[in-house]
Length: 459
Image (tube, rainbow, N blue to C red; front, side, top):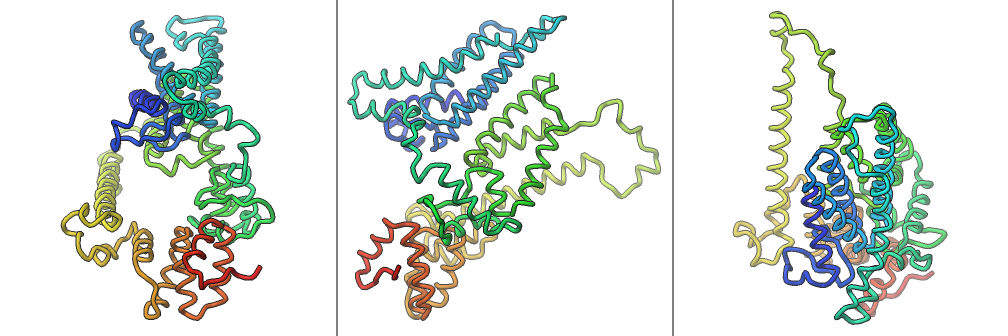
C-alpha cells in the first residue's frame, strides 16, 4: 500500500507541474495544477495517500532500522506534498485525523509509568503533529515552484485548496445543495426509500423548492444518506447502527496490536471519505475495506478451542472449516472469471469496430443481448444506437423508460420524448420535456435548437 501511494504521489506531482504528458495514455494527464495519480479524481487520490500514510506509520512502528525510518520520513514528505497538490478538502481532513490520532497514541505510549523500550514505537507526538503545518507550507510552496518558468495562468490554477475553502466556491454544485436535495427525496419516501440504484431517476423527476444540484446524481455522496434515500431510514439505521455497535463492541481505542491498529486506521480513512463521496463503490477501496474486516474479524482464542472431535463426530455430514473455505473460494473465483468474461464481451459494443475482438466485430449488439450482469449497459447501448421510428416507437419507449431509471442523461431523455410523441403519449412527452428543461437547461436548449419544430412546454 505504501508503494502504491508513493508511486501515485510522484505521478500526481508530475501531473501538477504538467510533466506527465509523455506518460499518456498510461496515466491521465489533467490540466496543470491538478493531481490525481492513476485514480482520475482528487478525493480518491487523497484517500489512497492517507492509506499510504497509515502504512508508513505501521512500518515505522515495526522496523527498528535507522535507514528504513529515514526512508519512511522521506516518503511521508512526498505523500504530504501530493495531498497538498491534490487540493482535496477530504484529504486535509484525513491528514488531520491521521496526525491527531497518531500523536495521541504516541503521547499515550510516553506517559506510561513503566516503559518497555520496544513499546516506544511511534515518532514523537510533536513530529506527528508537524505534518499539518508541513502540509500548509507545501500548499503555499507548490504554486510558487510552478511559477518558475510558467505563465501566471498556470500558477493561478495551482494550489486551489484555499480557493476551494472560500464561501464563494459553495455554489449549486456544492455538497450542501446535493445533501439538501437528497433530504427532500428522503422526506418523500422515508420508510421504503426509492429503491436501490434509483437515486438518479428520483433526482431527475423531483421538483425542489430551492436550489437544485445541476448534474446527474447517482450517489448521495454520504453513505448514511445514500442508504436512507434508496433503502429507507429504517434500513439505514439498521445498517449504520449495526456497524457502529460492532465498532463499539470491538473497542478499537483499547487495541495494542500494531496490525489491528493499522486495520482500524485504514477503515477510518475510508469511512471518513464515505461521508463526502462513495469510495466503497470502487474496487480498490472495496478490497482494502474487506481485507481490514478480515483482519479484525473476531478469532477464537487458543484456550477456547474445542476438544478434538470423537470418532462418531467425524462422521457428521457437516463439512469442516477448510472444506467450506475451499468451496467458497472456488465459487468466488468462478464468479470473478465469469464477470471478467461477460465484461469483456459486453464492452465490445462501446468500442469502435476496428478495436473490437474478432468474434464481436460484426452484428455486435445482437451477440451481447443476453447478459446477466450488464443487462442495463446493453439496454443503454441499444437505446442510444437505435433511431426512433414509427415502427419501433412502442418498443423504444419501453426501452427508454427502463434506461431512464439506469441513467437519466440527455441522450436517454431525448429518446424517451421522441418515442412518447410517436406513440401518442403527448402528455408524458411534455412532462419529461419539462423535467429535461429544469434538470439540464443547457442540453435542453441545444436540443431545441436542433429540433426547431419542437416547442418548450408551457410553464
